Image (cartoon, rainbow, N blue to C red; front, top):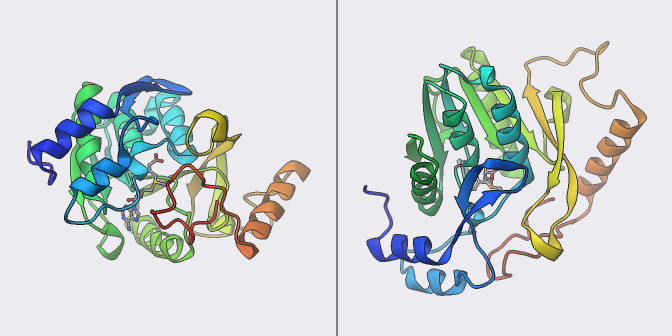
Length: 265
Ligand SMILES: C[S@@+](CC[C@H](N)C(=O)[O-])C[C@H]1O[C@@H](n2cnc3c(N)ncnc32)[C@H](O)[C@@H]1O
C-alpha cells in the first residue's frame, strides 16, 4: 500500500514500535512507542521533516471516544464516519469495529495516516485515510464526525470549532473526546459520558484522570447549561479556565526537540 512513507520507515515502525493492547480499550491493539523504539533514529532517517509523534502515543480524548463507541456501537453502525485528527487511528478503528458503514481517518501528519493504516490492518478492519487539513474544507460527506483530543492549542481549537460548526450546518453529528483541556468550546458541549483513564502516555509519567465524551451542539440554552451542573464539574471548568490563563504543559513524554510549548494540557 502507498502510505507516503518509505518502505524502510514502515519496516522500522513495524520492527520497533510493538503492537500492544490499548489500556481501557483492550479490543484494539496499536503500534506504540516504548523506550527502546528509537524515535530519535526514526526522526533522523527522515529528510523531509518529522513532526510531533502523536501517532505513537495514547491520548485521553481518543481513549474515551474509542471506549464509548465500542460500548455504544449504535452511535456509528452503518454510518459514514470521519475521524478528524486520527493520530494512531484509534477512534476510526473503534468505529470500524463497531460496524460503521465507512470510515475516513484524516490527519495532517503523513506518519499518522500511514500508521493508522498499519493499525487498521493489525485490527482486521478497513479504513480510508485523508492526508491534509480538512478544517479548511467544506463539510465531508459523512453522517458523524469524531474528534479525539484536538483541542490542545488555541488556534487549532478555533479552526476545528469553525469546521465543526460547518458540519453541524450540514446536519452532521459531532462527538468530541477530550480530557477537559483548556481550549474546548465549553459552552457548546453537552457531556455524554466520562471514563477514567490515562491522559497522555503511560508508565510513571502517565496521569489518571476523567476523560470525557461530549456532543457538540449549535446553540447554548441559558436555562440548561451544558456543563458545570454539579459542584465537581464547576470546579473542573474553573480548572480549565485556570489552565487557559497559565502555561500548564506537563507533557514531558515527548522529547523537547518536538515543540509542544504551545500546547495546553
Ligand atoms: C493529540 S493527537 C490525537 C490523536 C487521536 N485522535 C487520539 O485521540 O489518540 C492530535 C492529532 O491531530 C492531528 N492534527 C493536528 N491538526 C490537525 C488538522 N488541522 N487536521 C487534522 N489533523 C490534525 C495531529 O497530527 C495528531 O495526529
